[in-house]
Image 1 (cartoon, rainbow over the protein chains, first blue to last red):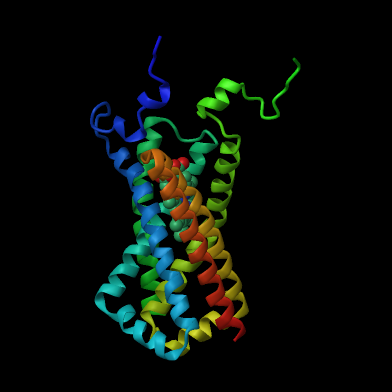
Image 2: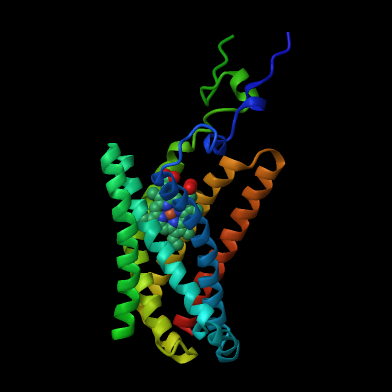
Amino acid sequence: MTTKTPAQSRPLSPFMLGQYYRFQWTSLLSFGHRITGIGLTFGTALVALWLIALASGVDTYGAVAPHLKAWYGQALMFAWTWALMYHLCNGIRHLFWDIGVGFELKTAQRSGTFVVLGSIVLTVAAWAVAYIA
Amino acid sequence: MAKTSKDLKSPLSRARGLGSAKDGVHHFWVLRISALALIPLSLWFVFSLARLATGPADFYSVQHWVSAPSVAVTLVLFLATALYHSVLGVQEVILDYAVGSLRLTLLLASQFLHAIVAAAGIFAVLKVALG
Ligand code: HEM
């Protein structure tokens, strides 16, 4: 008797997408948590590189500094801070789910809206305060 | 034949290598505890970064900022917690999508890279703050 072991036939998680799930905007939010999580990891590596450049002295830092002030450097930092604020707000939503709060469909959709709005407000606030101060 | 197994798994279950490896709950908890710690740390870092990036952002102003003991300590905490949280998070992502030897390769690569980034970042902060 030869039966296929479960290990060979077990599906991995993305198989549900498209085939079985109707698209909902909350799935986009959920996907966004993973995308921002990965993006933040790379961004944190850039933060470490920036600190290494600083620790290497004036000359090395001087080579890096213009990129920070360039439009693409500023845009990247703005995007990274937004990704972090999005992941933070949605992370809080996740932590509430972990203690069993907020699973009702209406609540989940509403908290999703708060996450998007909250992340925009926090990001804009951080940069606006910086510009004014 | 009173052979008892310390890890409570049947020999068949161990041979199949599926199911709990006994550290799933721990993984779950430390990821969430690090997330909790990252809430204030991330808010602090985002507001600080925006402040620096809109300023002159030259060597001396950034060096001056990092050298303040409160900033240096908070930066080390932020880097350590973010990278610890990240290595656990990335592990979850790899386990979801990669199988076979690719899985092991990616897991090892991720862990080595996270360790390098954490060591480099924290060393840099200490060097600037103490130097
Ligand atoms: C630089 C900072 C951060 C990095 C690099 C990072 C990275 C990641 C990564 C890669 C994942 C795995 C994604 C997945 O499994 O889909 C993750 C998951 C998670 N993160 Fe973060 N994160 C950061 C900050 C935060 C913050 C501030 C919070 C605040 C609450 C947070 C809460 C969470 C939670 C709750 C999960 C688990 C989500 C789930 O249940 O699937 N993270 N993070």
